[in-house]
Length: 397
Image (cartoon, rainbow, N blue to C red; front, side, top):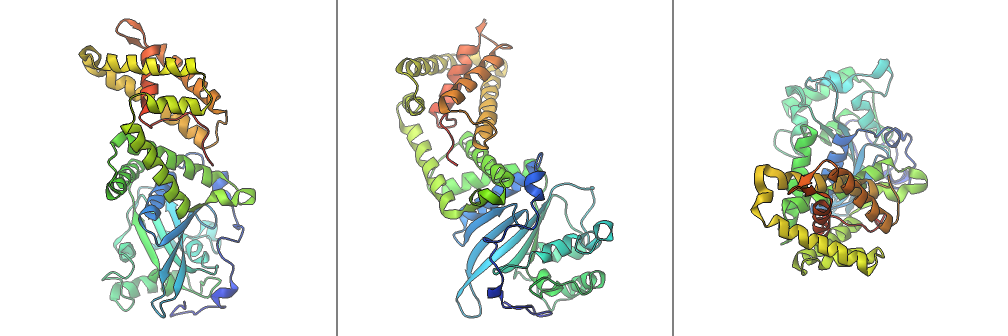
């Protein structure tokens, strides 16, 4: 695949694959605390892979923030074309629109440090390169052409807006090329700029995507089940981002076949959880972590008592029930996310005990029908587990 303005410096086959080369920098895994925007966007890309069979894998913070690897038919001869799309995610910065000046601005005037040079510089591997910039701030009109889908009307290379953008970038970044000899025309032709607003908007979009994917598969799930799936994906992406290329390269590359297997397994678990007799799924989950029969019986009874209490209208007064349910569900989501991410690493039994201890902490400040809330809240936790929205077994990594 050749650039119209610079050509390839060498045959693409002589370059190494993105799958084999250790990243030149690993700053992302070192400084990921608080990257909630990037994590949510990463989940969105993973959901995109789940929906598109042409995407085969996604890298998490290797040669760029994300790399989307896909296989398409080469328009020249119909042979398979392997594509690496280098994704940079920008969720902060001043409240101003992105401009060509921002795109080409160098840090301390250091060559190669601008957003444009960094993106083009990724073009150094065997795969054909594409580029994507995902930001929470919009672009000025001069960059708007990049927000159009690749190949869409308005992106023609002989169009006035394309030539104006290319001239502006070329004037600011003269002589800048990639290791493969590609320059501004190649980058502008193969770059997509997406604006995905703030983190809560991205999260809402991800939840809608999960619900839509489930619907497309003929799978009816409720909103809280979609939230559980999103929590698992967020934890997985966070763990992948924090892993190091050596020795954990496999953790940093999410394969589509593995993602599909996870999706189908979770689908089956949730379907079976809904169809099983109440308490049946809970018993299985507790048995899987080695709970004694007496522990299982007590948990099932707490769940039964909770269900009976919920059916009485007095627990619905002034939103108390919804508030307590949200408290428990939120705490379980936090604990499970930490468990999946490897922030805590106990056995299944120890994790179960930790969940009970956290419920006791919540109950210290709660009163239910004039009595201690611990039993009610534990019943709520077990009900959540019975509906396949929480589990105690060790995550599969």
